[in-house]
Image (cartoon, rainbow, N blue to C red; front, side):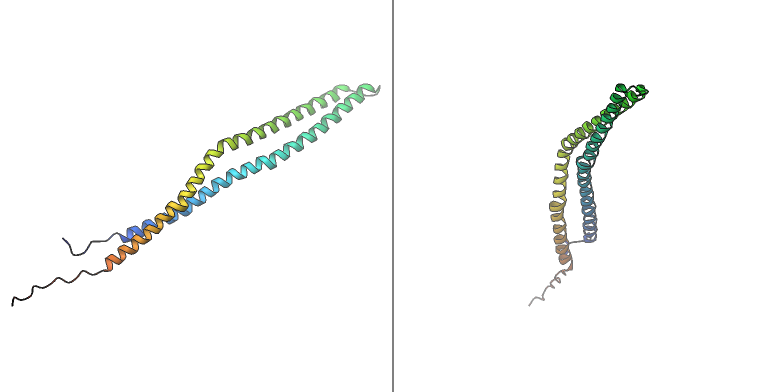
Length: 168
């Protein structure tokens, strides 16, 4: 049996600890980015797109009302001119309004789907973030303690072997 333990891997443990710290930092950044992207998308749908298509619905409704009023006025007037052009304008305005209504429905559906699909994934992301913060953080602390203990152990010198005393 040897008088000392052959501890030669402290450097490997230190290297692993350094790599683990880098991994934790990069993983946290990735997790935060994923969560932020979902939240940005949700805000974009709820605020930007919803407001945009609500505004388009108002504008396109007004355009349709004007086109219908012009067509009605042209029919009532003897000098109304070509009502076909007015009817085409009404058709285009109706199509534009229908398109805006469909887009608004898609935005609402997308919001529901995003919430439904992202909720379980966000829970997993939170668990991963917790693991990175607590469990791997604790692993780094334990590695530090282990490295200190091994360095202290490696620094201990073995007791000198006893010489047999001369028989008296």
